[in-house]
Image (cartoon, rainbow, N blue to C red; front, top):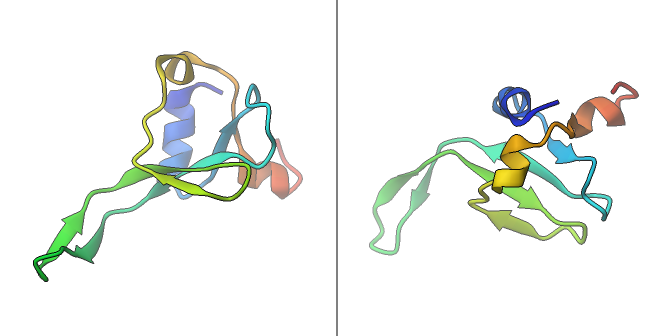
Length: 86
């Protein structure tokens, strides 16, 4: 699927990955808007953003897909595959 379809699934809480990624276990998910404490002690709104989980489980915050990723049509739903779908 293309990134537009993948983005809709991300918004619905699904985890997405690309078939061209060589290392297994990588995926992207959408972290919804939340409230966090800033260094000055005030509560602030943390905007929704994409997070990338690497093959070793490290989470990268604030990921932006590359041009290649935005134009790719090899995105797939990690959760659907885990459930036996495609």
